[in-house]
Length: 322
Image (cartoon, rainbow, N blue to C red; front, side):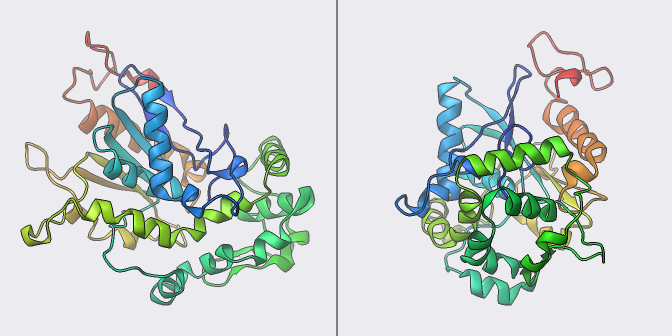
């Protein structure tokens, strides 16, 4: 679920070859999002997000980026690498398995039938949650519930198949993941702008995303039998306890990636002992996998000392800047 900027665990992040890390904040995410209508829902599509990243990179005069994201951001990084292959050199996706473009449109209703654990998206794409979660009090309750708060009788707000039990909002306790300062910031940002309208619009984009992705499919010839739609070194980190983005959903991802010069798959698949909010729940584990990948497959052949993380004369990333 896209969130406000600055303390956003779902945000996209890029690594540049001079050691800098950039955090692009998309105008169609979180609280700064334009209302629909009058704006088109296409403003919230994966292609629009990808184009925004490419525009930012151009403005900053960054020719190549390592692009990473979580949840919706995880979907964006895959598509950005496909819409802008000349820009993205490497991909990192936390919890979000790869979903290939499809010739056939699958509605949200059909998706929920095929995979009941996506049933909650039907509610989020509708009007019920947006109509209820308005104003500071409700947004505070909503965010606490999204980030794991429970009622005194141990009930959660979220159920993957049924959606949000909005009746429990007033009884939710503290979030185990958010500090009071972080929660206050989130609430202030949402109240200052469009409440949760922008966030929920991401769940209303299946048709526009499908239409946009025809351009990706058109660049591959079915007659060749080629399945590889991504040819970038990629790190995928699954959350072992994620109730929606189940690790099993990543089975078979490998067939969409090629191999490096030594014959090894360009896709590295790892797993941490965490749920959906892996970046909080197991920050140490996620950072360890990131560091091993960056200093290994990514930079191992680029003059970086893997033991010390020292920078080569060519100015590549050092361990202290990852």
